[in-house]
Length: 315
Image 1: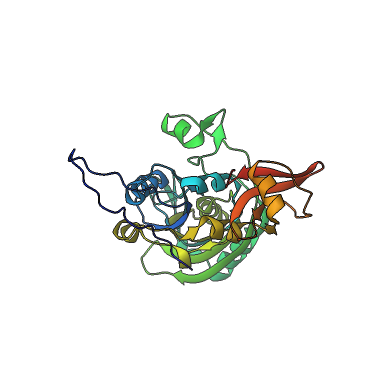
Image 2: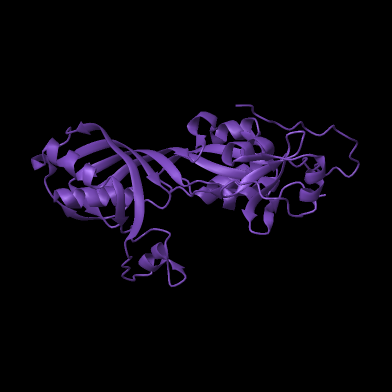
């Protein structure tokens, strides 16, 4: 993957003594390997300082305890974030059997305990199989799901009882990698989960423990992929601060995340002015590229023609 960096400004005389402003970075995506203990907003704040711009946004929020892939948009690439097809995600996780918590993870208070040593390996495998495929999942009470216009976790913190309805999600793979029976009263399961957007791994841990009759909660979570973006292209925040730069330019980001439509010079001029084109026969949102290979817009086919959703390179 090509890494793009922007050059420092050429020093000029500065009689005022004030520190000269940094040039704005080019637009693109920064794929961060989020450390534990930070919110997604914390990551954005550090990226803003490192990249020298306030135009930074994120897609696909990660809980503070989680690590791994977090997608950031820089400058004009923030316009892509709401349109990225991040509908499939992969995680490595550790589920602890034998205790249920208020948050379904290790950060909550333990509300019940049971001896998990009585659970057989075959029972664990059967319970995992039952949570694989198209399932109805009740999100964790401390999730970001909105209830009456207010986040569920905010209602829980305010002392309210929150009962969320189940919703359909898809768990494409739920693989048991290892079963560790090392400490008395604890059984840890290392798992790999490939799931649809909106699936709560914490809720899978809760439901797995509930199905086995001993309770369960999440103790570790690492996101390895989000849509087409993986840890292979991710950078740590320390690396970004030492050497600011993008993971993908705007052109590369659109090419990686959307189907591609190439247009001629006349059509490119029309797109730059926000005008419609003939339909392309491409399903969903796709990227429109000029003859030089630069991303001009995101567009979608309608009955009246191809309509620009976001113009990335206006006239």
